Length: 110
Image 1 (spheres, rainbow, N blue to C red):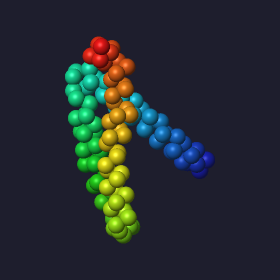
Image 2: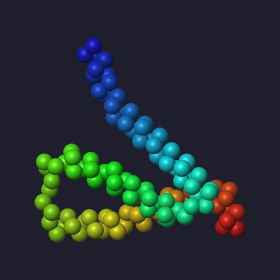
Image 3: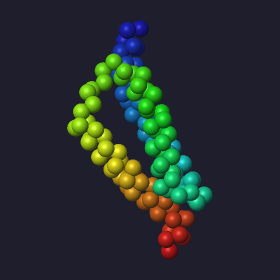
Image 4: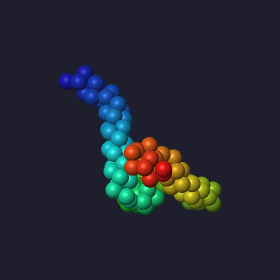
């Protein structure tokens, strides 16, 4: 029984990585379906960031409530620049090329 527990504990990181890869693949399928139906990809990215924040903020407040770092000007500036660049990098590097390689994207772009 102890050996089985150690094996399952060792498989935990691998199973989490596989789960994340399946989640990313599913999101890519949903991005393609939404783009095929004519949804603006920038709005889709905005929805993704809004739902991600709505999911992560309560988790952070619950699990990290005892060990919060001090809110210094350095942390505020880093958060600002991260928030400024994050959506732009996601929008331009993932969804647009995925749509451009599809049949609908090629027809739309000429």
